[in-house]
Amino acid sequence: MIRLNCLALCAALACATFVHGGVVIFNNGDKLTGTVTELAGGKLKISSTVAGDIVVDLKDVQTFSTDTPARIKMSSGERMKTALATSPTTQAVTADGKPLPIADIKSLDTRDEKWTGSVLVNGLLTEGNSHSLSLGVDAGAQLRRDDEVNDDRFTLAGSYNFGKEKPAGGGDTTTSVDNWAALAKYDRFWTEKWYGYASVRTEHDRIADLFIRVTPGVGVGYQWVESPDFNFNTEVGINYIYENYDPGDTDNRIALRLAYHVDKKINDKVTLFHNLEYLPAFEDPGDYLLNADAGVRATLTKSFFTEFKVEYKRDSTPAPDALKNDLRYVLGVGWQF
Image 1 (cartoon, one colour):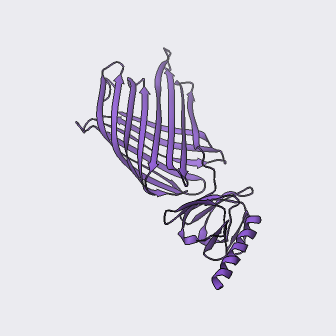
Image 2: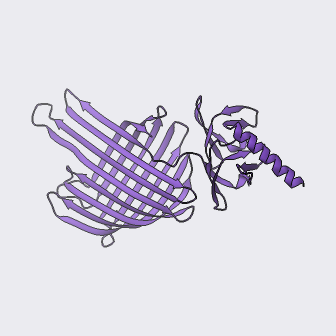
Image 3: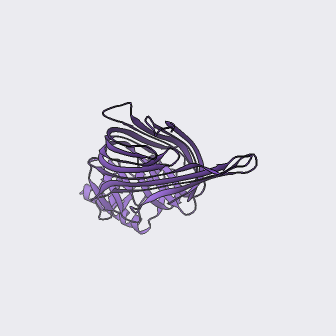
């Protein structure tokens, strides 16, 4: 009888909260009107029209509710999609009155599953003792699906860089930078941590006499951490590498692929990131490709940001007369969606 009364009380509270949804009440009595968008790692993210996006510790929250159905993942692995309300205890209640212990909710997300990404533009113009012009654009987009049917991730990325310069004393203008790259990748999660992936990357660098390089590959990855403010994953796989140099010969080989990605939010405005990819050939490990970058991104407004990063690339067997190492320092302004 007592249990039935408790459930009835929770259901009544849920119904009342669903009607008046959009208010988060903290333990100290403060209230915040907004939309709960995400819950993961003990952090609750709230979108407010007045204060913007706010991340708070769940332990500081007395009650909250979702106005729309949320994708909920339980610690047991069970997934569901429902609106949710909490009482001032450790118990949550779904829209149909089902009780859920808050401690057993691993993640909650009310946002639409849609593509997110950014476009970054950088440039440099000099006049006087030197005459040079350089422009670059980097774009990337990702779709992460984690619901009752799909648990996967799509990634698309591309970049183009061009630069020219003219001697200060006069003379012909020469091209100093001309390269592009494109990437497509698909990750399919088998468990919460393990996933398989398939990817293909295409590159061109006229200055390095690389007409085309294509590197399709497959492998497995492990998602050590996936949260709103920290992500870390490692991957191992096999890639086929085809290279066509101009002037020069073609080359193809099978290579091992070792890679990792990490990003960490320092605060609401600043994020650090780092990527590394190493591809040694099976027949000759001394023949390898190495791609790495590290940088910092600072949010300017809700849609715009500035970013500084260092890119390092090494081709141990480049085209004739080309250097093995390429190092770039990139500072630009971008738009995120």
